[in-house]
Image 1 (tube, rainbow, N blue to C red):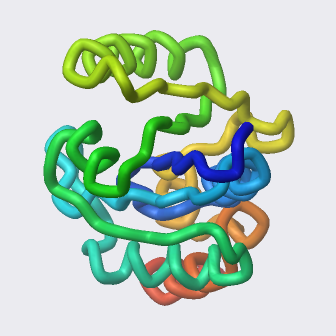
Image 2: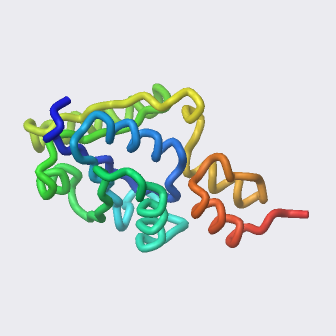
Image 3: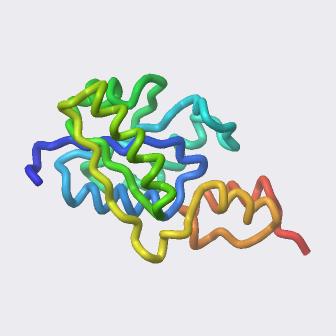
Length: 165
C-alpha cells in the first residue's frame, strides 16, 4: 500500500479490546496514517463508558504507534473519512456473522461515497472470539479480563465490577 493512504477504523470501542488494537496495529503497518474514529453517541446500542473515557482508553492503548490518531465523530462514516481525506475504511472481521453486517454497511457506504473503499481484515485467530459485549459480561460477573483488554480498561472494569469472593 502506498504510504500516503489514510485509513479510518470506525467503532464505538465500548470498551476497546486487544482485538481492536490488533487490527489498528496491523492497519498501521499497511497504511501511512490510521485514524481511529470513535462514535461519540452510538445509535444502535447503549454504552457502558462515555465518550471521554472511551477516547482516553484508545489514546492510552495506541500511544506507541506513531502513525495512528484518535478522533471522535457523530456523522456518517463516509463524512468522517472525507474530513480526514481518507480513502479506506478498515474493518476487522471475526466470523461470518460480522461479514453479513459489515458487507451491508460497505455497500451502503459505497453508494454514498464510491471513492472510499472498505477493506476487511480478518481477526487474528487468538482474537476471533473476542467482543466488547463479551468482555463486559465477563467483567460484570467478576471474571478476569486482563488478557482481553488493554491494562487501563481492565483496571477500570475492576473498579466497576470488583472481583467476587
